[in-house]
Length: 273
Image 1 (cartoon, rainbow, N blue to C red):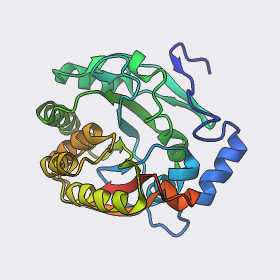
Image 2: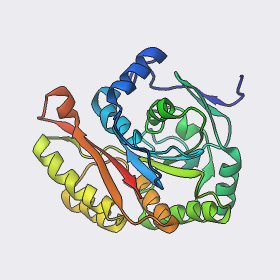
Image 3: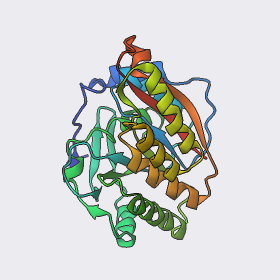
């Protein structure tokens, strides 16, 4: 099938294998074969190279029932495109196949939101959403996506976007068919002990679904997590949809994978229930 607006992989062969067989084998090695699938409003997944964060991401998704449409929320690392960028149509290609954008849902979000803008530029080279897709596809290959990249850290704006997204889901009776994924790594390039201590503060705030507490922890402890914005949007939307708490599924650092614990990046897999 040819797609006129096809977003091709930007980091295949770098963050994860470009060869489908190698990619499936790697994800399989990370998956939790004993996990029981359950519903959730959304989850938080890391987005580093699979050798570092793949075990956390795949281990978390192992226990999640992937819904018909996944709204992907990620930080904008490149600085390109709109502040709140939503790719409106087309498909994303990965080594495991194409994933269609849910253009009808995108249209509803754009109609409701004061902040979201139809924009593809922000997504052209951004890795934070791309790296989640093959892991999701390993467990289910027929879902649609809504890709959103965010540059703002303004909590009032993030809460407003979260509310807008939740209202669209509620008004259109989509709670059973739409889920949210926030893409974020935690502490960047600190010794293992410092990363673990700081990340514990961030995780505690996330598990209590308190984005104000999370922002305070980030500022007070100078936690260099990159995905505060998508997590704040997810927390607001999920709470309005009925979420009560978060659950930490897995935490580790790049040092746990590489053995070098002098300067690590932290990764958490969390479900929002």
